[in-house]
Image 1: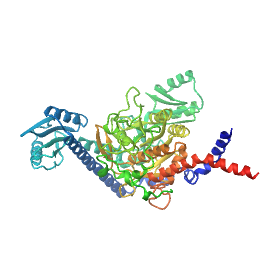
Image 2 (image 1 turned 90 degrees about the horizontal axis):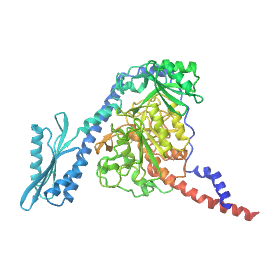
Image 3 (image 1 turned 45 degrees about the horizontal axis):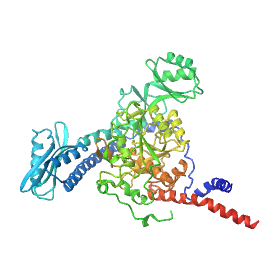
Image 4 (image 1 turned 180 degrees about the vertical axis):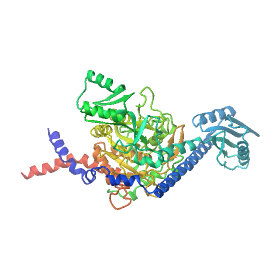
Length: 630
């Protein structure tokens, strides 16, 4: 009996205990529609400013391409050196070891291993020399072998042959004249260029016609034409022959048949009281008018398209944990700058807290994600696994959960929390309101405690907001990228009050030139040239708020691992209140409350956990003291 009343007092007073660790900043300011004058200003943006923004975005793409090329070169070099250092056995054994390495690293197109066998110089090779008649290819191969003879490392200039990008490496062994000469395919650099030109909205995206879509001014049905990447910042996209309808009460089969007949429906997908209708005759605006006139729905709206976007103990006294991942020291500037290494002394995560990534899927057999993935779901095609056919989702997942301290590749932010991949975006990198909403609900129902959404649209869709509220009401922390259009127009789902909206910062701590801004921004995180996992068992550097958002989602997972008793509201407040201030003092439109600080956040979470654990005993002692006075 005593335990019950002690527990009751503890529950009654626990909110008061949490106040010192999670200051309440109040609800977000209400969002208001843009006035006609504001709309006019957006339409008449200064042409010079657009050109400057375009140039800065092109610079970001070039930086990502260069960094990706360097990642590819170093990762291959490191793996060849490891092979040389541990190699044993005769020619057949060496060939088998070389084959095994190249099987997991498809970019290693050809490799020749030169070694000593007694007094004889021998070699074994695997793969094939592409474009074997290309003079540049053969010249670089000869130079690489010549450098091996001198015991020197060699890396050629990248070059193109038969439409592919190549690099020649020469990795010397301990004995002069021996080592590995290899042809590396670097098509990943061109892939990153295409991906980032879309991701940073340098080119019009998505292509009208791919989804039978229409582009409109956000939250209106006024048509607009997207001719340049900058036009994306003032446009939303929807399927021209689909609508989303939420009925006030369940509709009968007879009524559903009537609706299908009236609108010449091709399909009707159901999620709760909400339907997505597709017609082969009527377009969106006509269908919206039909439902408003005949069925009095809670709402009817276009079916929008969503696109990829991106303390008591002083922190200075904490000794950092520095991982041994091969690419960490040279390329992962992002983790030390948010005090991840010191944060790992507080918590490295927990297998019990799942982080869902709603994205393009994930390469399930990537070596650096081995054992780091939970079962997921392919919303776009339920009959298939959530494999990544774009690259975006694998990159986002690696930022959160790439294996740490395994001597390979990159380090994720959490050592133990697993990623739940939920594929809501298809091979074009786009997905509908329905798929994103269904993904949120599926992840919530299957145990996700944190959901990352590196995607967005400028339309405030009630259907999507319903799904967000469904997860939020079930204690899920939702995190989303703000967008890559350098605009203050609110993007969704980031701008919903139930979601942590994330802006992007560069290595020098400044706001990334592409990062969206506004009063809805909660926090900022690194998003410029972030190294992470990529399909093909490779690594790439990408920029965008899509890359910033998973830093915050990973932090939320670490906080929930440190103190599982915290609610989603309390986790979000810890993240906001523990930041490194950036920009104007206090909260501003560019960084929100500031750039996340992992050690500060985890220390606050740990302190609140200790306080809660001790609280029942404290209450008991105080009540006993009161009783003695009576």
